[in-house]
Image (cartoon, rainbow, N blue to C red):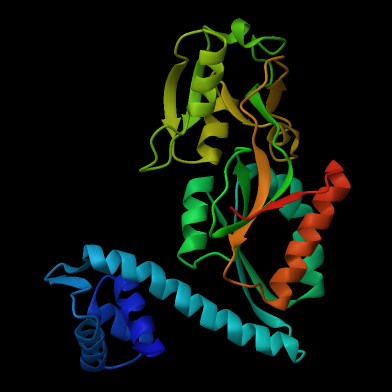
Length: 309
């Protein structure tokens, strides 16, 4: 098994066909086909289903893809680390972030980091915690900053808890319930919840709050795919949503949205910095992580707690 074979396999999966992958890699399609056949022969099983519509992964191929991506990513990081150690401060950092730490941590820090490492390209992926952690495990992300419940730990992950998350009920400015002080005052309101494709139960935090207060099931009128869609709907209607309080304070949203100060508390979650334990950071990635952790402690007065499992 060679690194070239792994790169070819991942390219075929990403492009959806042998022909498209050959064009992307700028190699002959016959060479690419031979590489995949040799890889499958060595493993003793098929990784891809071929058809006139393209290729799909076999069940074994799905598992192998996770390993292949992680190996390729680790090799690329090893190369970057050597270059950075010899003074060539360039490379790529891929990180995942949810909305709260994006506003609270990343935006204030990333500008200073880019000034310090102008040749290092930072790529940011947003999404829900579960999805982002899956991308850590398959090697597509270097680290993630996202909320986790206090009791969550995983043996293959390094988890550094930075600060306690601050969710809030978000509404449009001028909402008739803007001065509500209890979720009981909002029991007749309708809600918008984010439910990304394929993720069931993304509104659990809202349902849990209603259950705790014995209020029955909340009136979830709409679900949306993304945070931006949700906030746009809320800003133009009387629907409510639960999102980080900091969003209503951001310049982008502060003219349109408010946080309703209910007294009830939500299920606790800590904003955490999460990474694979088996994948050391490059020098540039470690510098960005250090800057993020230091800024978090400066703002929130937290010493942080690291868990491994």
